[in-house]
Image (cartoon, rainbow, N blue to C red; front, side, top):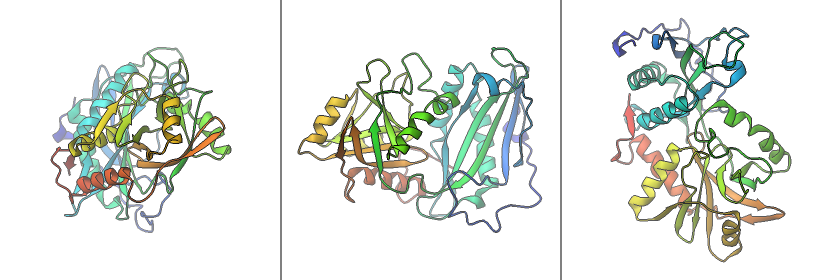
Length: 353
């Protein structure tokens, strides 16, 4: 494998940034000027480099186009108060990236290659980081199988790329969600905990049907009995019920969310009671029917904290608490403070570039 000191950088001759309003772009539409790329062949990662952003040329026989060997991560870099740039929880994301690669029978990416490729790319394109509220530089590392062969097999060749894009808020308003009991997202023993392309492709149809019915997202339930809440769309889901923060425990069907983990650590430090356990539809419905305050929100890298204003269970719709004093907003504010340097990073979560 190449050492970090030998990653060559080929700069673009002309930046595409002038003329773009990077504080007002649709989420995930404008690539920055450069990308990082490395090739896996002969059992090792080679040819690591930073190039001007460009299209990929792939054979129609390329394995990733047919058999699903694709894995990605979602990360963010933030502009700090002292104008430095920090990448949030790089080490945690790298660990999850490699667990996904393991599950999809793909080669792991060494930490040094992951870290230094990302640091150098973000440093090079730091001018693309927007300054608006809730804005960040979204970072997408991914690996695809590139062997050219029409046969169901583990690929012998791969590309590892990192691309970036300036982003603002993922959701502009609190969400209306429905509990999904027909389709499932993942089953025990499957790939639900991995960030592989198939997890997201299979969710598109039920999500679109929910949107057509007037909802923004779905609450996924377990594959066996359609009884227990698992995730919210592409995010982890958390509930604050009677001053207890409850979230489904990690499992083979639930993603080990980095934002979820961060919020749970913040909550425990505050002394808030936290429960990582199964929560059934009936338990949730009973809480929503009661006289207690129920907060519900999604947590993920893209959305950070996505408030849920209503949950539809069967034919009944229940309101959740989304007023300004909701606890979920304080988690988002504290996370943002840590990322920008307004709040001391006692956890060591920021990788300052």
